Length: 81
Image (cartoon, rainbow, N blue to C red; front, side):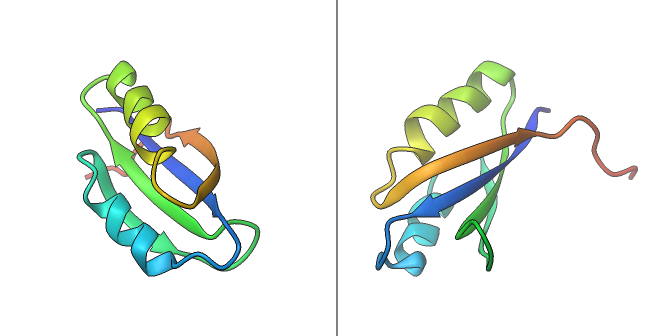
């Protein structure tokens, strides 16, 4: 199952709590956290296919109000379970 970590910059002064709530409502967003540093939010996204993953990031996450930019990192290997 394709997994990606999406680093998100938000508009200055926007409510991170509102953005987190909106992200967590998106099917495929497994987790989302506010973080300190260059980015404001990190989200883990899982999908059945790479095309579906691309759709979630491109059309769902980027359309959330006050999301300014994203950087998507595709995971190449998961934890051994």
